[in-house]
Image 1 (cartoon, rainbow, N blue to C red):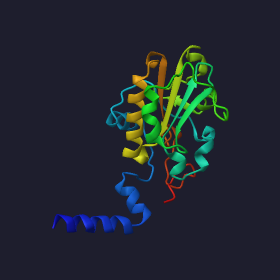
Image 2 (cartoon, one colour):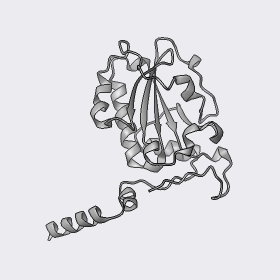
Image 3 (spheres, one colour):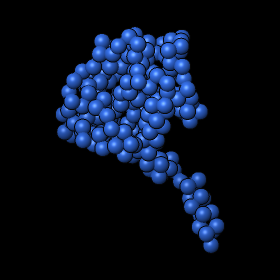
Image 4 (cartoon, one colour):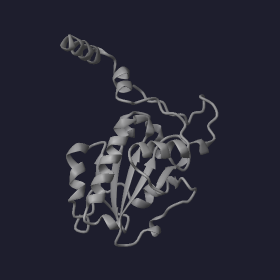
Amino acid sequence: MKKLILLCITAITLTSCKKTLLIVAGVRQPRIESDKSITRFLEKAGVSSNDVYHVDSSSSYTFWQDSTIVGRMPDLLIFNGKGELLRRLGKDECTGVYTDQLAIMDLPGAPVAIINTQSLASVLENYRRLDGMKTTIQDFGPDSFVACISYTDALGSVARDNIKGWTASLKKNKSADKIKILYMNMDMHTSWGIKSRKDPRRLKFRY
């Protein structure tokens, strides 16, 4: 009987539409997030930090035009104290393969990424910390490393698992005391003043 039930569930899952599969995985249509909801989401991932950010405004959110789920997948950018990109995980890489390697990565000896289309300064300019403060590259020492973990609450456990795994691995790294982890939420924020569902800034995933 149990095998029959399992087969039925499997059949339903395989034949269901993409939207159903995404909902089962915990993915939902984005909603307007607040400081409280962003913090609560991170706490569910086992993270407590003062370095939590939200997008400063839709006008500076250059990737807001891409409302696909893939474009919102969590990613991790690691920069050196000069703001140069050292490593990127997520979106276009197999996350699970590299997560554990963060713990043994030689950050002081890591070369700057050859194809460097992002800098720490360009990432920070689009975000504001939940306490209202802006952060710039000058806030970090030359010998430090900055890990920016971007995510969207709408991806549910998919995002939380990445956040949890990356954070745990970074804290095991031999340079952990020099690594500053920033959590960059990519959702719409109440500070944008969105009042209507017709507001063009509202994001909706295309399933």
